[in-house]
Image (cartoon, rainbow, N blue to C red; front, side, top):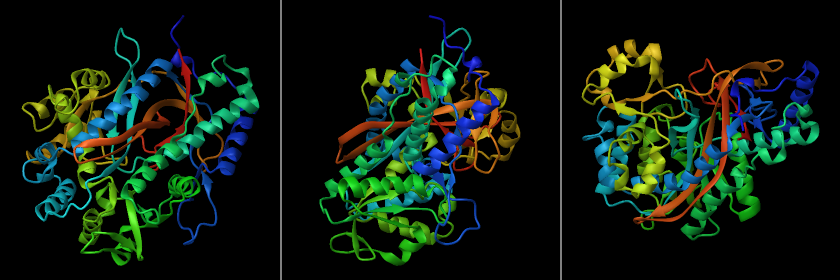
Length: 486
């Protein structure tokens, strides 16, 4: 069988057919909760919504590589759980005394909070919950087939699980209602994989709640003020209530400064006098979430409680780019997992090194057109690419280099196009695109062992090829799904 021709995608549609797909997709999105709040200004209570940015046609993805990404998610779940339980490793890599936290203030603040809890013997809850997402691109090197390559591993606020499920539903709806106008034989139901990420993420949160052991307690969602991506979070809230009878409280760090207390004798966390079983952070992954010391104080208060954190201080630190780079060094993976599992993970990695390594900066300068530089940040818009690298390197002093890693750029399929739709833009835009696959998983762990873990779903984000960054919430991407190809 001939290899799939990515450059021939998508098949041709007439203007009238694209208009029909556009109308059906956007009305389905509005009717089924694939939504954003509109851009400010808006009233304090929502009175309107817009559909989230989306793709009209799913992106092709090799069936065997999709299955491989799903398979290795369980290995990643265990790996990052073990990293979060390895205090010595995290102190060395991310700590403020000898690791990244020494030169990166944000990382240092998180590590220092964790160290203070340890010094005070105030870690009241051994269990931790991870809701993870491992992100991948297809990679093509000269003379070889496409391979799967990891972009990054997310341990905090791994977003768009519930909206990605609805994006996949839209494409299945378009298939059922139009057959995509018989434009390609690939448009068959068995090539559109199911996506049940909402129930999977809620299952992880419900497991943590049950492990806490107080049925009438609530789960706390720590959220950013003015969050436009609120529906991605609300779908989890609805699933928890409807399937598990677990109520959710949503508050910002500033609101929690007034409402949250930790009882001294029991370490029970209460918000507005309601006991909290699990703290799910959809904020706290970026320095802008901590404009003053007050927000760090509130985070510290939550961390010292008996509630199960998702993520805890150490699990958030485990998601640092420096950890990803150190894991790529020879023999480090075997500290946490067996050699067979380590071999499978290494098969999905690009070359990485630290700028603070011997010749690390020189190598980055010489190879800059094939590289991306990454700091210890999440959320999009933080990386430095290609021609921007040499002048950026000139701005870093010797200490600052320790906070940055260099990673070989992944080379995605050439010529693949998509039809992208945004509520703020009339019509659909056909452009050359790059699609990123994310695989979700959860892990409940503590006291040296993983209690439960599972691969639970996926997402696809598609962006114009000229955009280096990939965040949907930051405006770079649209939500998409996949059609499997052989």
